[in-house]
View 1 (tube, rainbow, N blue to C red):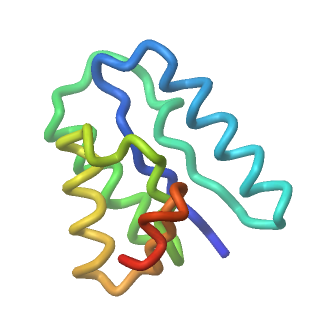
View 2: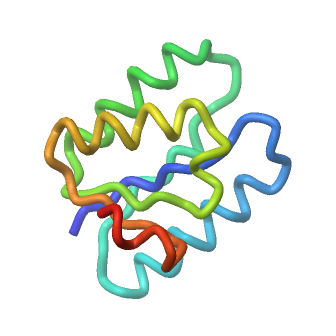
Length: 99
């Protein structure tokens, strides 16, 4: 699968590590992964969302990191993925039932 990673980035100092660990785990399972935490700084939130929606468009699914509920942007990505009939995979086992 082609998978986009969604999770908290803003005001989360360890976001790059968290996203990279998920990317490595998904890649080791044979998936092609898009990691938005590598985008450059300096854009407005709505500009990031436009870029991220485009990335989701070319993916089969979205992998929701365990902290996605703490992020307005990841919440929007979650809704966008559902509306666009993308597979939604949750990092926490307790969330798997929502897929």
